[in-house]
Length: 359
Image (cartoon, rainbow, N blue to C red; front, side, top):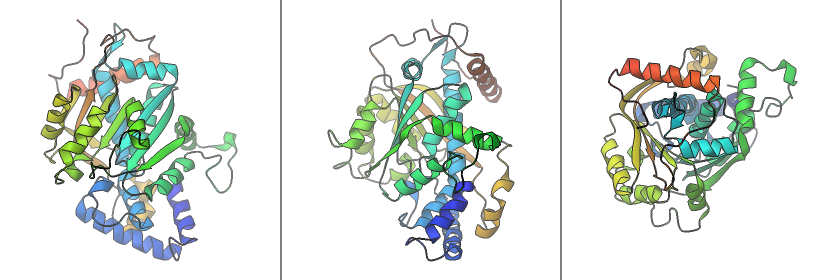
């Protein structure tokens, strides 16, 4: 909400918009179009996202939900792939990176970086103190300015027009600031289009280097957005083949997109191992993210931000030469509690769900 208010004022005061009122009217029109298209990913949006109103409408509709969704999928996958009594986990290479204090994340088609925020939320949820080096590859170059503005606003003592003393921060502002502190030098943006495989991930290009170094690669609603492209499989194969050993691929897409089989087949032929899979996951925002927080905008735009989704979620891992399931360091009480809660939730939804257990 704070970012949205500042962004409207800033955009209205420069060349991007003639006035605050006209910008909000354009945002309202863009919201109606987005709701009609039901586009969850920026890649699936018809029309130009160079218009700030279109980008702000997408952020209003999907940003919060997408961030919580990535957090939820990562938390459930980590719980399903971790054996508490022995302290072993299939996430062992990622946990090594976290223990070393630095985690590299690459988002493909992530637009405003909502999925990277979801990774920060996952780390905070389990009490991990690693710094995150984030990178986003997206076709629309205008997302870089929007993304930087959003993540800058997480720091309440610096992002606001008037600095707030640390002892006067609200609980929500403290939480957002803790997420911001986990970023290592912000998020790097790479303008590139996965739908043009002849130019995408060229050897030694900036985005290819970022992908090759990533511990976690995020594919948020990308496959359904490019599935009609004749070079879709070649582009995705290029991504999977450039993953380093031990890296995780987080695939999230609409349950009815029909893309689950495509990503499964490509992952198999590229040598990836599927470690977590939910064919249909019904996700709802937590109750403490109250609808009333954005009530003003829901009235002006005549559209509510999206609070639920039915998705298919899969986590793949590139096998490494090292021991597949090695003993992890001592587990904190906070981490153990979150894993137990996630395992209970998964078992309740699906009693036959199989959890990882070392042989």
